Image 1 (spheres, rainbow, N blue to C red):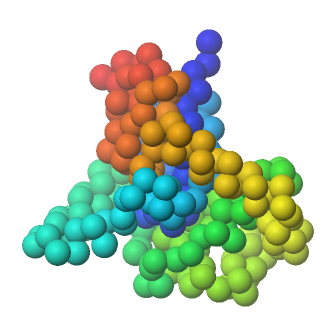
Image 2 (cartoon, helix red, strand yellow; image 1 turned 60 degrees about the vertical axis):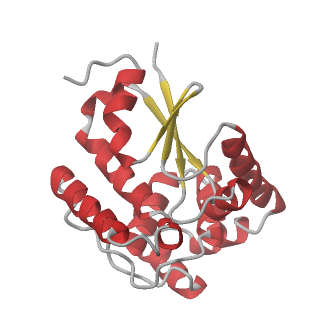
Length: 203
């Protein structure tokens, strides 16, 4: 029986980008269904009292520098040589995440994800700007008008709220998170543990 892994996801997190790109380094996970669930990281932080690392560790000497070192190591390990920290960070991804739900409805989720990930974490686009977002989507051959219009649908907006609330109810306090049933794995470094949780020997 195919196991399902819920991947709680927001484009806002560089670690979500890294985890998503690293999935290809774990071919055993192809036996599982990876269900990407759009969620608003800012909503998770607000609901749980958490803070982004840049705020939480701002006063801790050496901590943020070490976080960047770990990112570089992760990129080297998984050959993620396209990653570039976005110069416009932090980015409000509300429109992007609503757009992802719209893309699911329009059956263009995969190309939408690829286009936005590249714009956010490879080419350094200002994804705070709706005009820039439109250009990124159009360049990917997506129906920009349909996606952006549908992203304003009340049902789409409510779906993002519901996803975020459900994630918090399941114990999510930050991203990326992988859930196998009720078992939670937080962070991009947990993919080997996810393999074990779905009954695959990673060795």
